[in-house]
Length: 465
Length: 140
Image (tube, rainbow over all chains, first blue to last red; front, side, top):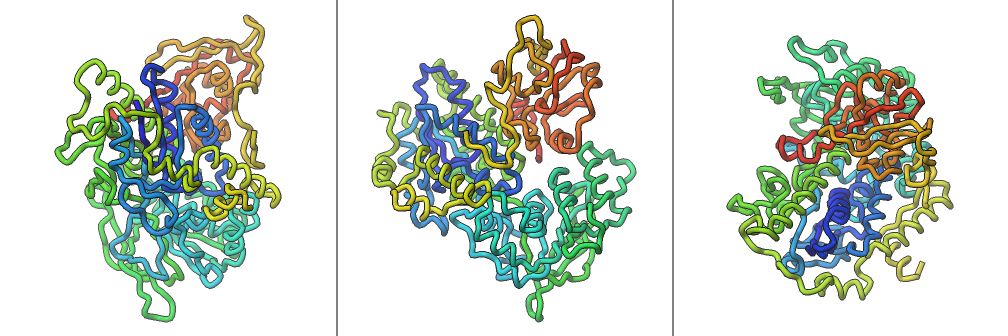
């Protein structure tokens, strides 16, 4: 088996890990991982909030995967459709090159685009949470920094953990973030921020809250930041409903409220349940977020229930989840991700494509924390291994044959091979050198790490920095 | 090994000293179907995640014992579960997100062994396959 993996995030590494540890040696397993980002680890590097360093401990396992001689990583390689803005330096690799040079293919390419709200279009007053996350993680496609020194009030649309991450970064006393993996340029902007209030707008109620107790607890415990108390009626469990363990604990936390008393602090936040945006009015001197009340229908869906007072705000940040790129092969527009069954990618006729798989958010949509991604990845890896065994004993699983059943060599496609020689592609050993240098530069500043941009990393790897 | 200044101690081979055979606290690890994986001996103060790793038992520890994930979820028997101190808020926050949570679930990294736990069984809730069988993934 010569497997190409598109994407270098946690799902990709967990699939590789499982296959490398479980596949019989006789299979002549080789695993090549391609990422259009120059650095590996996907959302662990470019998504996990900087004040959650423990979550990043999983990279130790990924490093162990990369030590296996059967494994290779190729960063700065974009497979298939041309990548969006922000990647001028990447190598474009046609998907056909993977078909020709590999027996198996796994899409672990994630969900890289923000889900949008129909009533809100991007404007100077409205930026998706993903852009904000890209900014504080110094992602290659990061937008310019927001003028936080001119803003007073931020409205987050959606109440998942990403929304709470953004709220926490905006509200946290900047000095508390200095020791973490936050770029100096980001710290400088946060230090000048004049944001005083963050409204988190949720179309359903506390029982349907998308955040987890951990994220809520962190927001509640922020020093010198207070939560606006909620109406106790909102926190009552309706008759006939049995709250789950997690729901019960979240309701208790919401009732308890923030550690800091309301009106005792300069910065505040509020949860606005049962509201949905209907537009953004930017005609006046200050923007106003237009809102409607919502109610739950019989299927527990939020439906509009009359206009709510507009909310004066400086910036709207929709945080409504993510979707895969529509140009991705096997993308299903109705799902917002690839069409799969038990890890196998399905063609237009609904039948499995032989040797082609998908895992992680690319396969299941953008949901779940690292543990869910790991479980899914192990399941897909087991499926790949089981199909390989079944295929060696009987007819191969899947009908359409797009992959090369017997690749000639252990090499990546010639385009990638040549780009490696030219120093355009980042291999894992290169990354480990950059990683160590980032940690060294961070230590000099008394912090976890000081991140490099690709230009800096390239200069460092060429010995010019 | 590179350690940043805030990570919790990492859980790796070598952090554990194995007791003299016959003198340690006996722990039985079982798989989700109840089959015995291994019986091991450990010292007072060791945690379940560390000893599982020491003995190559398939218990994940993605965050390496810093209570930031639920991958070292284990299920204990009620009589031993009751001997442990209550899980704290941080552990409960993570247990919320564990697969196949039970009333006697704990994070392996938070179960510190005492003599009273000698003979305890820890079951690994391996739920990999269920993700496909159920056709529905956890939302967290």
